[in-house]
Amino acid sequence: MLKRIALFLLCVCAAMNSVPSEAVTKLRLGNKMIEDHYESQALKTMAENVKTRTGGEVEIQCYFGEVLGDNKKQIENMVRGVQDFYADGYGYYDMYSPLVRVSSLPYLFRDNEHYRRFLLSDVEKEIEEPLLKKAGLRVVDRKRNWLRGPFRVIASRKPIRSLEDLQGLKLRMNSNPTSVKAWEALGCAVTVIPYSETYLALKQGTVDAVTCPVVDAYFQKFCEVAPYLTVTNEYPQQVAVVMNDRKFQRLTAEQQEILLDEIDKAGDYVTEQANKRSAEIIELMKKEYNVEIIEVDLAPWRAKMDSFLEELENSNYIPKGFAERIRAIR
Image: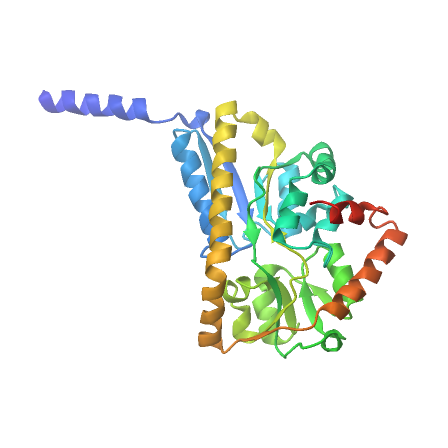
């Protein structure tokens, strides 16, 4: 008899502590980084904390390493509503907001702080407005604190020591049309390849180089087959955590605030790791893969990009004067 009472009480407690399946909001999040990357670990921790703080009412399932497709596919998934978040760079959304093209213009931004101020400015609000209105996509990292990098390089199979070494270089690039145009203007033969397929493309010689944040040369193992890292730092970079707005609006106000808070906390962690681990990772690459870090005179690169920017304005690819508005941000 006592056993039956104990079993009954256990079932009652379990029922009281569980959340009915129909009350659980399940969301899907994707990115391009491998699971071991600190960006992915931050997203995983964010998802766990959201589930805990909402009492199990909001569950975020994370899919890393382009499991849900490349950047173009995952953004399409969000617009269609079959994927709820995508965490990657800002420059991939120009099909919905053409002004986003400025975020990946080489040598437009002075440094990481200038870029972050731009992301928090009224200019950025102009850029994000059509993204929300036309595509129903909301940027949900409020603090704009997901630093990626902390600086960029070209990982190459042979040394790049000058602008001349870029001429005819078979360079892997993402599908961001601004980046493609910019590196073609610098003289490269650009091929668009998904990030998850880049290591193999380098190994097989399909391409000879890839641009990336310096830490990714290690996490993605690019340095294993492309051991020459030329510091380019062509633009500061941050992760944009973007969400399908219809799904965001279905959350309660309390759930929304928990989600936004945890995303900002995750961004703090990512920025801390980007700054903290870059020096350590560079030393690991030197030790494990005999990597050479190459510093070049970037003045000719910048001069080339100044004329490139003028061409973009003359062709109405970006509005005239828009870049100057960004340069004026202090």
